[in-house]
Image 1 (cartoon, rainbow, N blue to C red):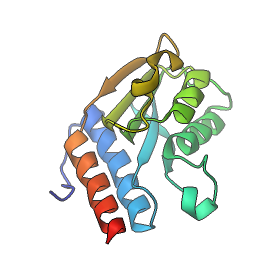
Image 2 (tube, helix red, strand yellow; image 1 turned 180 degrees about the vertical axis):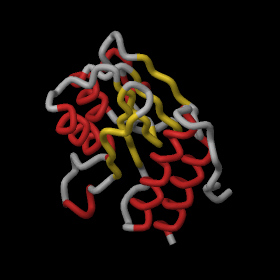
Image 3 (spheres, rainbow, N blue to C red; image 1 turned 120 degrees about the vertical axis):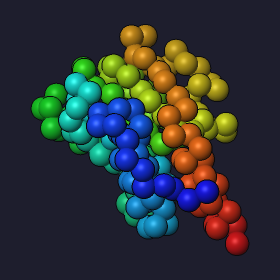
Length: 155
């Protein structure tokens, strides 16, 4: 199933996740694991974007979430992401979950679960206790993208 270029209601979870999916597609085209992330302020404005760049930067910490957090923090001029939501195409790993906890972000929404390295498998208490977590938004599309990438990699 290819990624569909659908039109979703403005400011909906699907709308913002589709923006993160676009970043994931771009990362995959560059040979990166196809993960994209955006930070949205007050449910309306994208203030940070990131896609995996671990290969390009030769930096194991250059995950989509970390890059999006950094961009959003710079935009806001502070380290806390209050009234912000992270949309990410793959469940954050423990490293990214720790960074999200320190940012005190209000909400984390991820598409596909990560059955090997996702933070929910290890310990959800990593996340700030007030942070809301929602999963499964466009999970099928994100999962397809990841499976296709790794299948192609194995060839």
